[in-house]
Image 1 (spheres, rainbow, N blue to C red):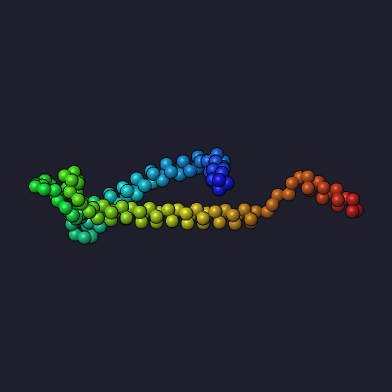
Image 2 (image 1 turned 135 degrees about the vertical axis):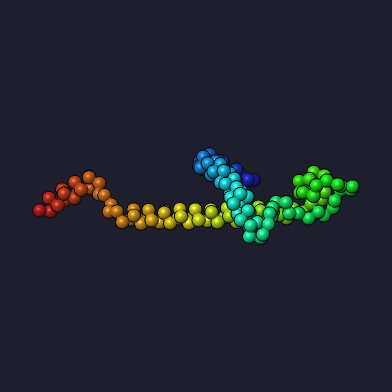
Length: 149
């Protein structure tokens, strides 16, 4: 019972005292950033890969039909097969999503690396700047020096 109370109090501290606004902003920016990466893969990288492979390769429409519906005479596209009730293994869509993930991970890695580099540089500049002595300390030093004389 004490573990549950400890967990609940820890969660309450996180929810109430934690910086939930920063978390919310991060989630919103992350969702928007995910859309940018999706567009990058779909509109820029995949056409380039299609060009290299020598044709109109649409990875999202690459699939294997594991079980076709009886008497199916429709189009052999992924969407049409799924709508008809076929058992379809959409491996091309998985490859596209995997490329999205790898690109997103690389971009996040470079952003974190740049942020860490900037943080180190700013910390170095802060250490290099001489510390300003407060006025009251300067006054006390002057009084001390006068008393010594």
